[in-house]
Amino acid sequence: MKKEYDFSKGERGKFYKPDLELYLPIYLDQDTMENLLKFSAPTGVEVEAIVKDWINKDISIVKTVMSK
Image (cartoon, rainbow, N blue to C red):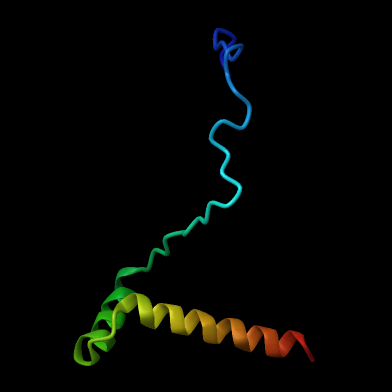
């Protein structure tokens, strides 16, 4: 950081939001996205819903394995 920055008038925590929920984007490679679009088109189910279901199922599998 440069020495000439002046933070003497800055406010600590000015932009802190304790109850803020952060939603991270998930980036898929082209092949995966194309396959998901093929699955979703005939059923009318959104790609986001398919990905969410797959992630939730994977989490369930991990929880099951870790609880043993």
